[in-house]
Image (cartoon, rainbow, N blue to C red):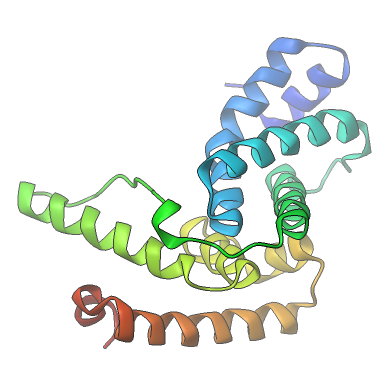
Length: 187
């Protein structure tokens, strides 16, 4: 498999195959980030597509030596916020549907893990879009605080504050609205 650097280089030379490989490699992560912010699958799909269009148009501006995935997350994050600004409507939690692979060993463990994951993602959806995006990228995409600062354009200390406040709000949401997972997640 080619590295991001090789794929970028080939894409800049006009290789549609290399560009397709970059998109295929990151499409699920970009969709997840867009969905965590926008809360609507159809809109998230559109924002993810716009992310890749923007990526393609500005690929020559990508600084070699930087982490490509962080640069792409930044585009997805900002594109989603643009969509949100355009929409300016309330978000219905019932519109959100997620699916995560479970890592449990037994059938009951798989079902329990899947249910807990779904409930946790629904709880995250109750956060404001900015907090939901940061929480999701930090915990589910395992990004560093520095990467989040680069992506969001916030300072490192601001990202830490948003993570702290987001976790605190998430804990309260879980305790009040998702009692079935609260006992598993909140100690």
